[in-house]
Image 1 (tube, rainbow, N blue to C red):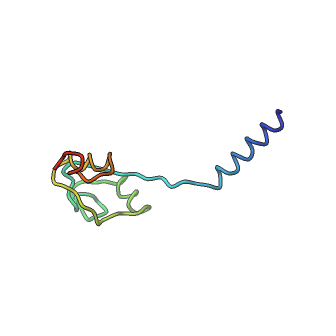
Image 2: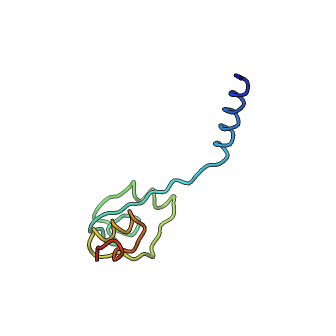
Image 3: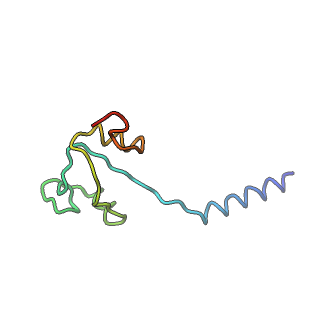
Length: 88
């Protein structure tokens, strides 16, 4: 029984090493303009950590958002359009 358990642990550890899942980071900030971060060309505020994430990952620049934060947050958390959640 101990050998079977050890074999199971070995197989699970081998599979988990080869099946590496991607890390996804979503940054949702209120009142953040398009050029307010360093990787977009801002010289006013230093954002070295966000810049490093952008340079080493994927930057999505085509998106739809509303000018207030509540509909955007509702859409992100529910996966529905804001009007479906009762926010406009």
